[in-house]
Image (cartoon, rainbow, N blue to C red; front, side, top):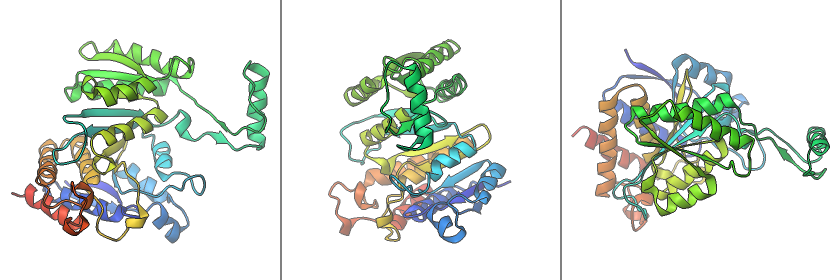
Length: 360
């Protein structure tokens, strides 16, 4: 029986890198049937909607999706499709491994970290009200009636909500992941010294959940200190679990430590569905040029293989990607030390080299 997978090409460079991942997954010999669905700018142009109902229905039906990058406007336009997908499908885990690969330029060696980010709440959930709106005025009035710290009447407002239920399931996922993958340590990241009720709640829940996993070490770090610790001594850390906004920031930090977003995969996971995608954006200025680095999408495909239990195929793809990167002969320009575009491989050529290595 073939695995039924929703395939969302994406926009910008999305179709190029997602197609590369699809080709490599097919080359493993694992059987897939792809249900192609469009979202983002492409869907907006065709259907007048960035997230048609058919996309959600497909992912709910298949339980798996491979998604190319989608464009999210800054400061205006439509809401992030990624955020909408997470909420509509209850994909409460954002899983972002960060591992160094030989041949990728980085000031670090042997980094092997996993960021487990809560997806459903916190400031990043986007519950906010613009300045001067009735909603903002109502919230401000309520705050000023009860708080010793008044808020200006013309303020824009964002709501930071942390619940025990979401905190518990994300921390429990982090510990379960550690047990399943032979990890040694889970670190809860927070700002409970200042946000004593929201982040304080997250920390208390993490401390309670940790008691159920005596075989896994547990500690916690304040988020700003965590950033410094990761830069200075990343070898001391392993699995990092945290609320939504900190996860967004720290996952980019850890990606920078391993050479950039071009080699950083991710997954959004819930109890009934999982969506695999690169961390990086859609880079519309490079669309259609066949120059985009496909590695982050390929490694997201590796995560998909592991998720469905195809461990042998996952390891084979991971080894093939690592070998091609280390040899440095058939890599895109951003993976070359000299950044010489005239000597760089195209997206297609690098994918071909990885498939050839996979079949060797």
